Length: 90
Image (cartoon, rainbow, N blue to C red; front, side, top):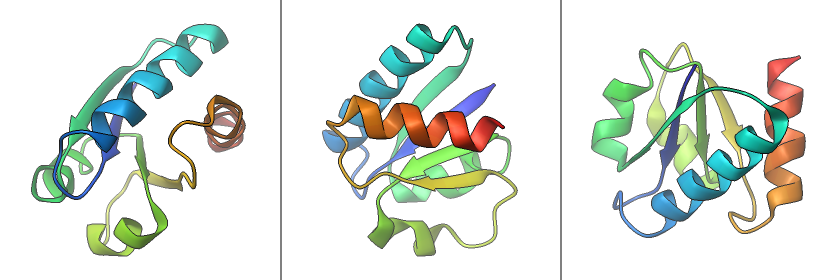
């Protein structure tokens, strides 16, 4: 499974979200490749990803992508990330 963690600049918050998503996926026993990306890269990467993790303000900028776009309100909240990824995979 391919997951893209998106922030505006592609550094900092997307890397934090990537690392926290990897922790959650490991705990859930899900094998996935998680990539941190800025908005420019994310638009292309989302074409081949199953899931995109991003903030509410950036979700609309992705445009029409085949991936499930999951809005994460708090990139530090492992419980929120766990719940939202679990729901998306059901």
